Length: 362
Image 1 (spheres, rainbow, N blue to C red):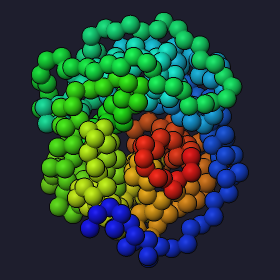
Image 2 (image 1 turned 120 degrees about the horizontal axis):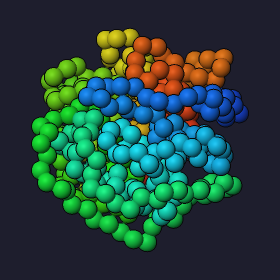
Image 3 (image 1 turned 90 degrees about the vertical axis):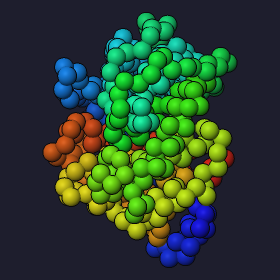
Image 4 (image 1 turned 45 degrees about the vertical axis):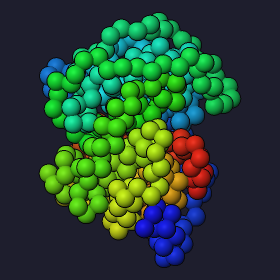
């Protein structure tokens, strides 16, 4: 069955959506953003003397929360990331996403750097790990004051770049978490007219298709290296859709996409990261943002009978803490990370792909 056929078959069993009060959503986002603006930012150490900083992630979240771009913290974090070396996959991906939505023309030189980093650090098997060295230098704006006011969609740059990889990968493999965020970063670069070699995208496509578990889901590593669970499955579907879309390939009838969507429908929950063994305090908000990305990218308002946005937003409105933050406890990044993921879900931050009729109002 094709993607559309599966959706229609499952929609026949759909359950009524829980009405969502947009005013309550907006208030929750505003309160969460206010909490983020009061924090001090550093990051978490993941070894080898390197730190995964929060600045890029927080800025991307504040942008979607509607924070004034002239806010002193916004501008401080922006200048910080522009002056930092590119060396961590997650940070580079979020930086590309931020700059591509902020002003792709003004920041295209820096976006080019992000793209080159992602191209050069792709592992031999098509995955990404945390990243290694910074890529070759490219012109970087020393400062760029971003105007406030109406946040209209910026125009694409007039210059178009088609990049090549610098050398062969010395890294055999990575993980499916870094890999799904690298795909998001590459998409942002392509939206800014900075394109990777087609082989980079073909490697992404090949990895997700060939390493899908037999049950239709994905785990943290290669096929069969672990049981499928929600955050990896959602991220893999979104990554595969992006790769096929930018390769000019039809994805709605792709067997791997359809099997993954059926897995999400069969295992749907917004109470915990679906099918994990660590319970609901195991990358829960990370998982919800994964659901948002695949829901918007695919144009699916429902996974099976379930309205993913209504269900997830209901949970998030109930889970927000009194100070405005969200926190699952026990995983990397603490409340800063969880609050960002919650806001991005509530804001439906993912930009729909062209020619995808999304039922998710942004």
